[in-house]
Image (cartoon, rainbow, N blue to C red; front, side, top):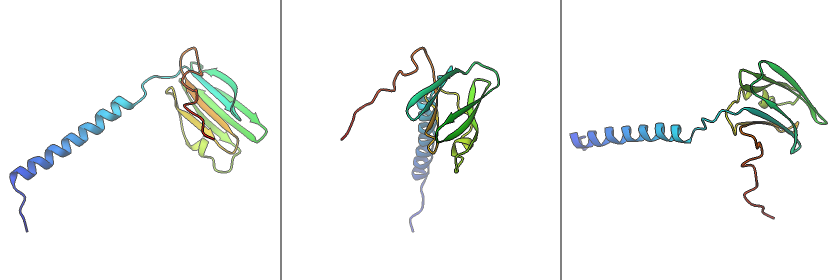
Length: 131
């Protein structure tokens, strides 16, 4: 059996430190720090309504032919607090507040998207279409 020598130990420590730094830096560089100022609600791919995230505590009931969802806007964040869908994934998703974050309720075909800026459709164009 081969013994670990001092050089091997130094190499292992250096690799662990570099790996940790890589993870920390990638999280820091790739994270979206842009807080959104609007929440856009879509049903069946059509924009249903847009609300300001600057409002203090507001509940919004969104009705669709497939069911309903109740959203809560509070402290510049939004979440789904109630839905009649069977899996309740949208309810358990929690708060979103950064531009680009979404909550999706597939059974009710609801998309809640946080956007920022004047043009809320900016960056949402299709990259390509396949047939």
